[in-house]
Length: 189
Length: 302
Image (cartoon, rainbow over all chains, first blue to last red; front, side, top):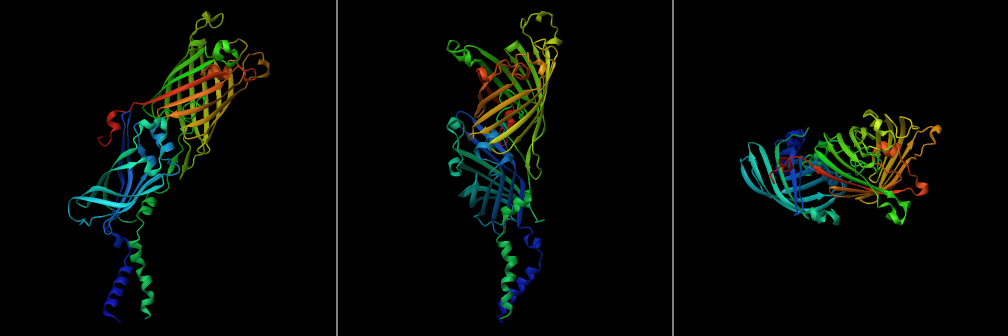
């Protein structure tokens, strides 16, 4: 038998014997308290809302990144707007979450403290309509804490979110979004 | 080679790491949620009567309500539009579940003070609650000077009346919501001597959404008057209308046989009957203001 093949098989057997959490350890970073906020600016009215319960999970080995935003957790200063946002615009009963599933494009040494410009490419889904997006942002590493931040725009038409003509003037067609996620090491339960 | 046959199985642990479903993991992390069923009705009123909805904390609702004269008053009165009865109201949410309000009706020059508290919120998901329940209580003082003979002799106490309601509603679907409103109404001095001080009633109301922003509403109050009081000129209150919501405003346009817009008047003292065309056109306009501080409005420094 080929010597290399047997070494490979031996390694596989050994790795198989290891429990999953050991394999996964220190590769995953997560938060359940990320901040996602958005802002709509028109001459008639400025509307902003913040979600402080955004979930994010990053696999630093593969660069895979997942973000999950529960729409009902967006907090508006005006609760009537919040109700309309959930009921009429994003239809939170039917489509309760917005998600991003993608990959960080840069190869980064996550053990080095520092600030890096990063981008992630993947599927961004809002209102059950997916778009392939590359989102630009910044990654700050400090003592095993990763802070991801990104500012990007979301066009309502890209996600089939209708704004009735009567309130057309009050809601911007392109919404500015800010994301701030502080991820800490995460082990699978 | 025999050994190679088991290679695919040995690869399983590596594959499972490579095909990580991070999103699925986040979903299971979040677990099953209990989701409140919101927006059972668009407004704190179905038409005349209160709905289970309350104003949220620190939100002010300014309400202007009109009822015009009777449609059957003819073209000379422009089908009632020449006469208007008005109620102005300021209604405020102390907490997300408790609201208070004050209003003034031109009918009987009556001031009404009320409080409304949501005791149960309909929910779906992990924990299911089938209905929303809200308690309503109000006191009305009528201040008109010469409403009936002998008015001058009435004491302040005599001018008071009280309403208590248990509002029970269920949003059956996105479109359909129904409400039951058992009502207790007590007048220290009824408007007509033949009337009883105590009046019990049950209201039934509902809405059906025609589109995202327009709904069809209906409401009926059945009063428990005994057969001996049939000499009274009062009828049960019935109303049909539409709600139109435009951002911060809710417009409610309707037809009703009641002129008054407070419980004492529309449940207890409705003089018109649909059968004879004693129908009033009316509207409620609700404008909601958020009184949250500016600093809270810009949580990330926009």
